[in-house]
Image (cartoon, rainbow, N blue to C red; front, side):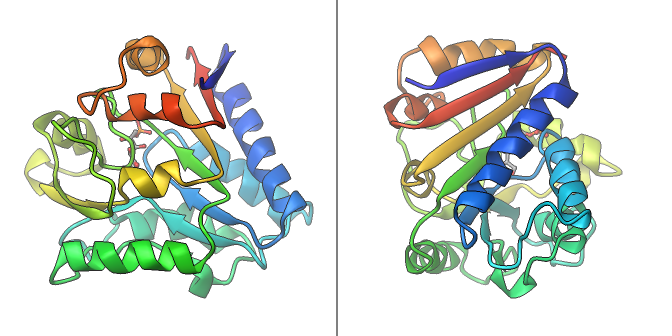
Length: 237
Ligand code: F6R
């Protein structure tokens, strides 16, 4: 069962998450980190950037694979997940950018790109620590509620709920891409350790379902109940 740690505030949650990620890097300098975007990890990446800048953390041998990318957005687009990762973390730490991977949102065949991405994760030796956020509908990466768990990295139609939730990052909801490439649930579940971070009252119900509800593809994150090493960090505010 996932282990739940609850915090009063976002700052404390981020500190804990950053400490867990930092200790992973300290224990294994060439760790493969699975990374997420969205608003939740911003404070975590800020701390990691700070610790690296003052010389307490070394990213020089770290490899990273991101969970997802919007289809149709070039890497330089300010809402692409590649852009987000560069700005929030990679530009601020001593990582070799050649060792950072984000699915290519411009790939002509997103499912083929997915197959290559899965092979890449395998070649890297699998993910040591996967950081996840969670959508209000239980999505992880962009694995949306569905009738089946999809194991491979694939193209996904975003739900209206996800498009609305992500509209806050765009000038207008019509600019939010309708499709994305996401790592599949096998890629996530094969990670040796999983760290899921969620904050705010609005995520309380979904965290409760993930922990105590039925395992069902209607709540994709419920599959985490079947993983042997999951820590959920939840902050109330
Ligand atoms: C992004 C991702 C998504 C987000 C989720 C929560 O890479 O994988 O699953 O983690 O949509 O987003 P925030 O943190 O903005 O609430």
